[in-house]
Image (spheres, rainbow, N blue to C red):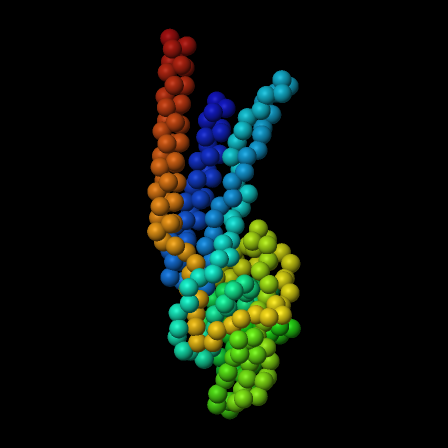
Length: 238
């Protein structure tokens, strides 16, 4: 196969993966706590022979998570929490601890504070937090201190932002870090608020159009190369 076709195919593959990432961003533009993702491209050189010539090809190195702050919506819900600034909540799942910015929590039958999937919210010591039975009022301070009927019973953990390149998207709004981050000493939590997605739909749609046009241009090039090779083969076999 012609070298130009190899190079173009790697580019097309990367553009397709970027299109999937953009589509996922747009689909989650209204998902509480969703973090926008982008695709990282790099160039790598493939040796063509002993003459020192190389072929430049595109390489997808993975996805980068955008840790920018999303807007906040006031809900007045007791267990609706939003982080103002950096940091992640941590929840306990069967596969291990996971990070999230989605702060729509509730209590289960045992009084544990859990997310909509039933995963317990962890305190700054990485232990589940439970509200004592019969508690009439729950307060959560800006530093994450949880109080039941005016008495402090724990502190909700807010963990430092990992390196974005070290974050991998697990599912929904959950992320896994290669190394679990340490809790922040001075987090800022807003009770009764939820953080919105940090996706800008207009920007994503504009990028989608750019990627689509680039993909169509690459496909046109491949079609022309295929036609050229067919014509060459036909001419040589006459």
